[in-house]
Length: 198
Image 1 (cartoon, rainbow, N blue to C red):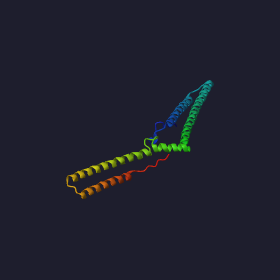
Image 2 (cartoon, rainbow, N blue to C red):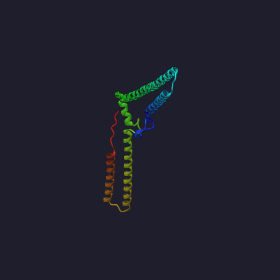
Image 3 (cartoon, one colour):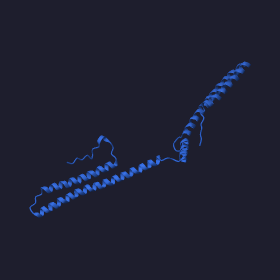
């Protein structure tokens, strides 16, 4: 009894090329064996009257058996070479991974750290990310100081239109000093110190 499961793909898993090739070789072998088995069955039904016919029938029977054995041997040889090829490919992959995982010299480790920090190897390194954040914070601080300066100027203009006495001038100076101190304090608070050693 021959069961052909070539088209059946259990659980809809994609088959690898190696598996498909093996299944094709198996199907080819099974078809050849089935053909010669059928020929042997036909020989059994053939009627013979003389010794020469019987001898010819036995020779044909032996040839069919030889053909079946040859088909099996051919499949086994191709399967053996296929397994050797797969083993060679796996060995090459394992060797590549082992080379990647090999211990590195101090110079190689230092170069990797520099590449990672500066972002040469990848799109963005640690240093470039920190620099981007720092630029954004500086922009925010400059916008805030510009806004405060505009507010101070508006306040000064409003106050200059009115009569200023000495107490108002002192208050204005005090406000200016507070604004300057506030700007001086916010810049260091938002600034992050970066230690970068090579």
